[in-house]
Length: 164
Image (cartoon, rainbow, N blue to C red):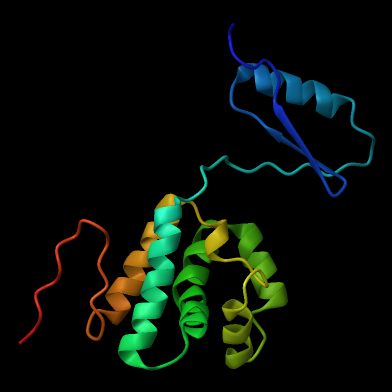
C-alpha cells in the first residue's frame, strides 16, 4: 500500500532517533515531538547514505600500500596521519558541531598525541562521519599528497604515467 506511514524509530542509550524520509514521516515525528517530556534536546541532521564497503576497503589498501612503499610508518599510523591532515579539514569545513568537538577535545593536544588518537580504531571518528562525496574528496587528497612517491589509483582508473 502507500509505503511506511511513520518515521523509523531507533532507540539506543536513552535516545530516540527518528529517520524521516517523507511528509508522512515528518508529521509522525512532529506528533512524537509534541508529546516529548520537557526539557528535551532535539538534534537534526541531514540524512546520508552510508559509505560503500569498496571505498572503505580501498582506503585501507592505500594505507598499507603507502606504508610498504614509503617505509615511513605502520599502516595504522599512516591512517592516523591521513585522518588528521586530510579528514579533519574536510569535516571542519562542513560541520560546526565537528569543529566544536575537535577543538574542545583534540586541537590543543601535542601533534604525536593527535596522530596516536587518530591511529586507534573508534577513539575519535573522522572517516566514519563522512558521506561518500566527502570520503572521495579525502581519498583524492591522499592520492595527491603521495603522488610523487606512491601510485594510488581508484578502481577502473588507468595507472599514472611514471616520470622516467
